[in-house]
Length: 136
Ligand SMILES: [Zn+2]
Image (tube, rainbow, N blue to C red; front, top):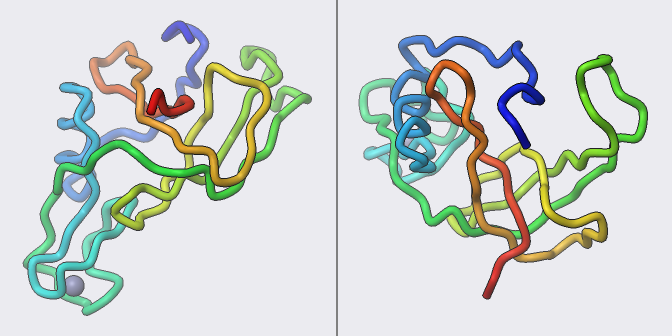
């Protein structure tokens, strides 16, 4: 996927999401971890959804491995610049957190497929995590 094919409406980083986005510039996948309760969450929030702590949240590196939780193949483009078909999925990372993402490199997906993270660079230097079938 070329950067020109990526939607241009990716939200700007803010004080809650900037650590996540900065890591994507290095192609490092992170999710928020709470030092109070050890819970993981994504996307980044100002408050822990498990224990309501607001001071102990940090971005933690994760493996980038997961499984396809569910997916859908989009055949009708919502915008003229988006090429179809493409596959939108929920990927459950090994750490238990769900990411809403895209699957690339196959047209025959199944729930439970093992996947690994890959990256699509944005024009501003950030990158979007996508997933492809695991090599092993
Ligand atoms: Zn917590």
